[in-house]
Image (tube, rainbow, N blue to C red; front, side, top):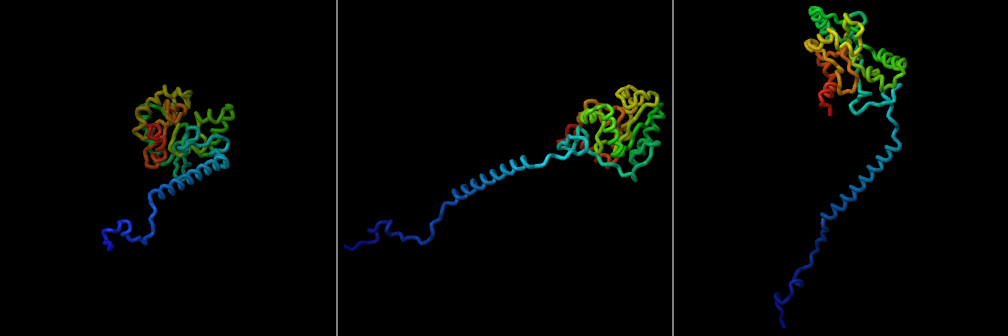
Length: 245
């Protein structure tokens, strides 16, 4: 019997393909990704365990103080500051030096206070790191204080605003017993500074309940009237304003 093409089943009519069989791509990619991800996760875990076991302890930033700086660079509440270049310092009073622009502003401030009948005195201006080291550690030893206790009222070397040449400690000539004491806030000098220091770009560094957690110092003011000064105190300003992330 003669068979026509229509009599042959469809399966037998199709010619076998010579093309290689394609593997499904999706499952393969997923499998490889899972394997790589698992391997990387295990590698990172081993690395973390290795570093935590074998990494060296942090070196203290200041010899004699066991504490290390926090993520903002602060040591016991104090921000780090560079030491002023001696060539940029000028003498305001015997033994009191400041950066040139700060000194000029301070002279204007002192003249205005005298015109108003206020007798401001200058207790301290620029202090080198070596001087600050003595101020910090000698008094700490004399008072038998811990570094944390001493840092509440004095900055460690390398962390003092005085080292920048932009900070000054004021006193009231009519009430010298209030020098470097909270009672300075009751003097005519402090009252005048509160109302007029901003006109000469001076700002109280450590008000009550300051964000740095340091003691209230009504006598300590810093100059912020130049770009260089603003840059140095930028972090402290942001912290006080609650904008330091």
